[in-house]
Amino acid sequence: MIEFRNVTKLFPDGTIAVDDFSLVAPSRKITVLVGSSGSGKTTLLRMVNRMVEPTSGGVQIDGEDIVNERPVLLRRRIGYVMQNAGLLPHLTVADNIAAVPKLCGSSHRAARTRALELMETVGLDSHMADRYPSQLSGGQQQRVGVARGLAADPNILLMDEPFGAVDPIVRAELQQELIQLQRELDKTVIFVTHDIDEAFLLGDQVVILATGAKKLQVGSPSEIIENPADDFVAAFIGVDRGRRALRIKHTPNGPVLVDTEGRTQGTLVEDER
Amino acid sequence: MNLLADAIDWIMAPAQWQGPDALHLLVFQHLYFTGLAVLIASVIAVPAGWAIGHTGRGREAAVGISGAARAIPSFGLLILLVLLLGVIHKPEAAMITFVILAIPSLLAGAYTGFEAIDRSVIDAARAMGMSEWQILFKVEIPLGLPLLLGGLRSAALQVVATVTIAAYVNLGGLGLPIITGLALRRYDMVLGGAILVAVLALAVDGLFSLVQRLVTPHGVRTSQGIARSSRGPKNPTAVPVRPLVKQEGRK
Image 1: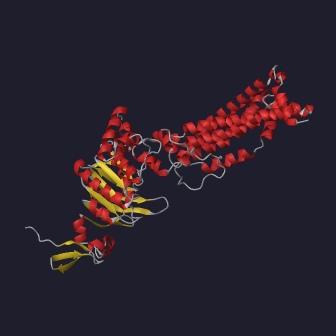
Image 2: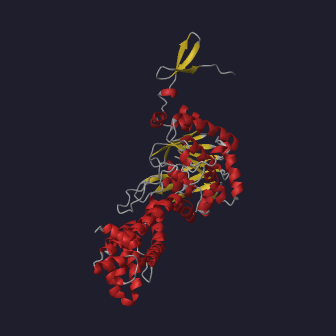
Image 3: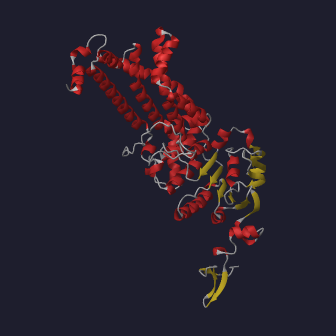
């Protein structure tokens, strides 16, 4: 469990990135922070591994204040996946993944074995182990990034718009794989995105943020769609457009659901019970 | 009457390769001065440049100091130092002159090497739990090495050309035939010496270009070049650096 307790972040230039924010991210669930740029979501994420120190307030992991732990050691036990993967360009794929276990004291051989194992987990062919990041596609780099995040077998995984820079088809693929992976691994995940569809797809708990990390609504995707807190949230999640605004259309073969564009999205089936 | 042919004849004459001022001894002296000056300058400038590159602090001071150092005329400084330190300290005076000449390029090479690294790479290294020293040694130094070598190369080149003036204060090197020749109006000797300096400079440059190629990290070599900097404009006085070798991959 990760708990933000009244955290505030004031940057030296005077911007208040986060203003008195509190939240509990439950264990073994995916919590998605979603908001437009400038909503402080990345700042919040980076407070968890002390890449950003809050100006006031604090973060607890399983009831322990993280300020009591050395940042370097804290970061080694928290997986971090960032946009554009952030791979070390002078290391091979396997060495990139093995870097964290090695920092934690694994032998070269054990770290390499672990890296190859993880490559399989994230769907990378083992013949890529000795390639360099520049020789991979964006999607492949991102898989390496995920594998590296998981390398030290952390309980917590922080993901900062990890799929933001890949094309929509690869993104959809990676999202499905993340769901699959989470089913097996049961990590506590905090996921940052500005894509509301991604948030609803992946999140067990979705937090909608406005400027200054103001919480507009916190809940499961269903709760938010069924009962948006205010007009702004309703507009932000788009309840009135696209795939989220469906009308019933009666056809000779029974009722179907039609979106605002007039395209049929599915049929209306009776509840089985 | 062909000066160039005369100069080559002068170089080839067996008399030039004998005695206390034999050309191979002068070449050795020349390289010794160059090597020692660049070594001393590296010991001073490289750690300083790395510190600036890693912390991002002191960059303005470094640009200012290296700009000023570049503007100092070496010959004037040499004579001034000889006068200040006294005639018995001529070797020291010469060495200080050459070290000051070498520092700006090395300093710029060291810190621009770090600045050229994509910030997100450093950020990722820190987020995965590397200590500052580990970031320095495992990420910044290897990735900054090609540009540092570029600085080293241009420093060595400047020094190897400038060591010629050491002969003015009787310290030998390949400036000796040039200065002696000028006094004697023996222009074959002057040109011969100048040709040897030029050949030596080309040899040093070639050697460094080879080393530069060897130290470029593989993953960077195969990519389109080093990651772009996201820390604002480059140092305008930065050393001229070869575009990172677009060599065919290793395997």
